[in-house]
Length: 208
Image 1 (cartoon, one colour):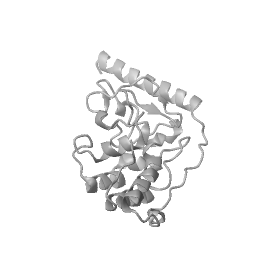
Image 2 (cartoon, rainbow, N blue to C red):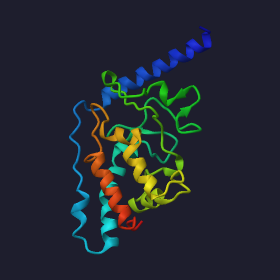
Image 3 (cartoon, rainbow, N blue to C red):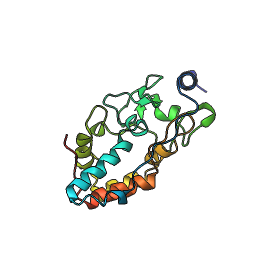
Image 4 (cartoon, rainbow, N blue to C red):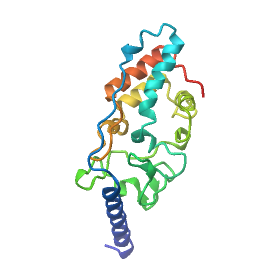
């Protein structure tokens, strides 16, 4: 093996181990249980359709603004981590396509699934959301408008958005984040039903 390649591999391993040590030291091993989600049906008593749609998105927002989602939708080039949403340690950046900088891609440490012994989360396409979908620091109304805008959401229509949040493995990871991390509220099935009900009622957004 050539020396530069060996050095790169060892450096990457060192960063992963350093990050694991920080995570182990800073993350509570026994995280609090996940919060609940209201069912989509529970909003049916709101007679005005627009008001019902806005209320549905308010419930959806408890997932979108949860650390399991927000950490991967940062306002800067650097992801956040843990329930405290602290800046990622070791220092990593978004890179050209959201998968990290050359030589220190996300896959350097994050595998295809959670590695619970070291408490390193994982998924087959671990990455940051596109910069156009940065949610950190934005109101729920602003996030809603982003979500609906095909110029920012990856050219998705409303049906494609619902499909994305109910089938994408990285989204689904939010409900199976591994030890020491609070899962996103409710279940993905409940979240998907809320999203579909929001679409069916006109996909109205809260005031920004």
